[in-house]
Image 1 (cartoon, rainbow, N blue to C red):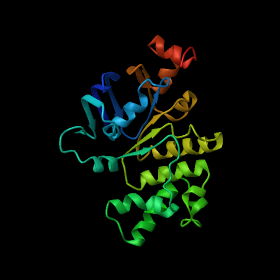
Image 2 (image 1 turned 135 degrees about the vertical axis):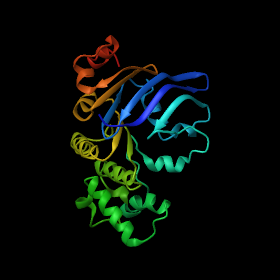
Image 3 (image 1 turned 180 degrees about the vertical axis):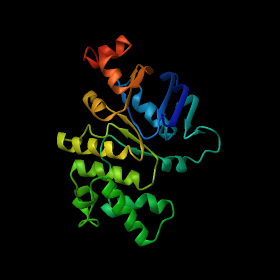
Image 4 (image 1 turned 90 degrees about the vertical axis):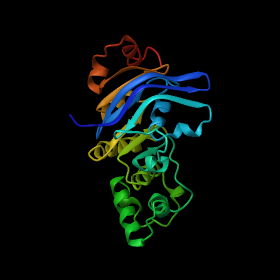
Length: 252
């Protein structure tokens, strides 16, 4: 069956007095791809950002309930948020390479965690770029600006940069929505390979993408977790009428 990488129990999140998540309870299995789907504003990206405490950056945000990552309560007092974000990497909707060389983009996290030896950094850079399917495309231009890469290459660079911190969980917030179909296919193939080593949670508006790459799917609506189960079951035989209405295009 595998273990739970993430366990959430009775999670509520408010922005000021406005509820964004309501009594969400779910377990996310390790080394699986879990897709979060639902219409805009339903809470899926908010939910994703709970796991690396990105919501801490929003002053009015209030969270209750239990959120465990690898069995540890990540909202307990004294939690090292920097260490948490090393364990739980993040890839955003739009590629956001740093305005520096490809080499320095990947070296950023290892250097932050104290790795300085050139040989060690070079090994990490080659390994992570290779894992992200980018090594052979950029190995002769490592010291050129990352901003010179195409959009799809930039997103794979951002994935490599996240992997360089050696996370065990990778959060992806609509990682292909700004990309062309060929780049999207490349990223999807990469996600399928990465799940052998990483737990991946992906927010996607693209329901075909969810069916192609995810093992489990969670459908959110108005801050509630409406349905959660095996992807094939959720899409072919949902138990909740609201899920069926959404996936057949009647709203959203």
